[in-house]
Length: 186
Image (cartoon, rainbow, N blue to C red; front, side, top):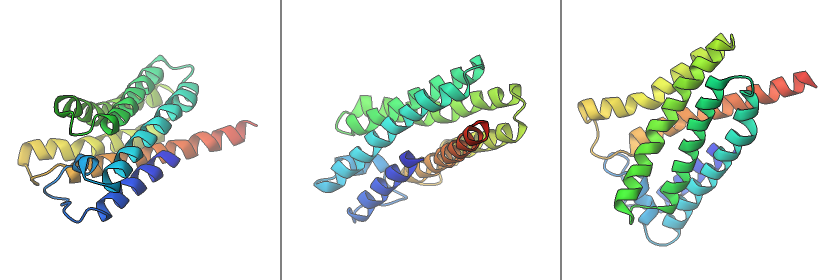
């Protein structure tokens, strides 16, 4: 649950510290090469959130889906998305080709992992969680589909933020569900 809060705190603080940033004209990653504390804070937030997200996957999702090959596959894809998030912070826009590749990986793998986990929830007869996960996956993918279809903004900060907020909401919700089930089992 800490990963999304930490990540967005660092991102919003970086936005607040850099008046030249535009939600409609920039990418969030533009903050990663901003001078001074802005770039450091932004990149730290991505790396720390990715690290926490990876740990959530290894110690949470893999355990949660221990009896489901489909669930473990979705968790593996989610882990890859977490690694991509770390890589965005490490390979900022100064590393143009690498940065672009890991950014695309994050925003493809996040929703893809949720589509896979939707199947795992359905197979596990968790209909409500399947529907919720499917809706979140759609919300995470839709800003990108719309951007490439209608180009509704010049930059990508808005689709990045909407997609990341959707994945964050799913992560926090699943953490709550997992904690509740764990308490009920003890």
